[in-house]
Image 1 (cartoon, rainbow, N blue to C red):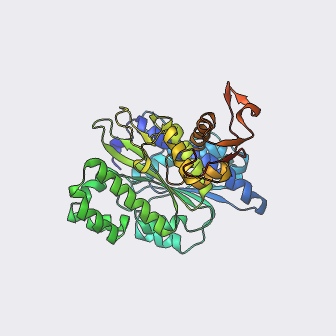
Image 2: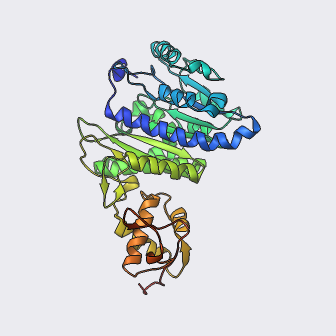
Image 3: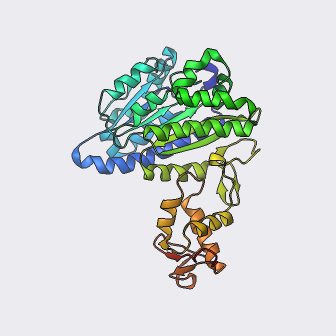
Length: 376
């Protein structure tokens, strides 16, 4: 990563840090409650940590994570942190910035800082050990070091999850360049990479992005990580897609939590549906995996899927939301619209439920009876 990248904190960097920090807060609370009774640890590992602060003093992700840990009695005792960067100057600055954090001495496990190149050997080392529950953050400047093998080595064990920054603009350019063939192959797998090379030149920019993101998502699912969630960033200079922050998990709860976090950080909404994108210019409103649906359209989707069934709101949400841009609030809003339109029967009915800020609520256990097909 170039030195001038950390000259000052850009809005994109702040959003990226917020996504990681908020997910870490939720993940660590859940995991620490499960493992502390056994006296076990949990960990946070950042493989491209940078210097810890931007030149304007704004803390980047490593400092924010450690500040979170210091503020939590459980994490002060249980959290192991490891930070790495290939740049020795960044490593030295990071060490200084960590030592300057108020209360850092209260951490039972002193942060470990290393200066190694991320690549095949790290993946092999991780595969050879059983990991404690660990949240990994991988944020390379380009894409060198990122591979399916590395991602699998990080998420293979229980409660281990990964958030990585996917440099779409550089990968997009690298697909057509034979010099970068090996780097591209290890990210997608050779077959998927070859499939992309064969088709991307004929695709529009939007179709190309969709194909690239779809292929990396399907590659991760094939690895054994069924819950993949990308968040897009646009370049403020060109308004083109530049990066994706990709969350990878084997657990639906983690996926659901991160989806809520990403939705809240989205720059735009269309018909109540989050864009899953940060765009300083607010130009374009692309949705996760190409979706462009409103709450009303969600209602039509679930009418079709659950025709003739009686099912709770929570069951509808859990069964339907994977791979869509919809969060729980969208399902509640859609079901409420269907109820008001008399297209479904609800128990308890709207007049018997509480109101919040003048709007009827739709609790998780409220049961919905969908009409048979052709009966709505």
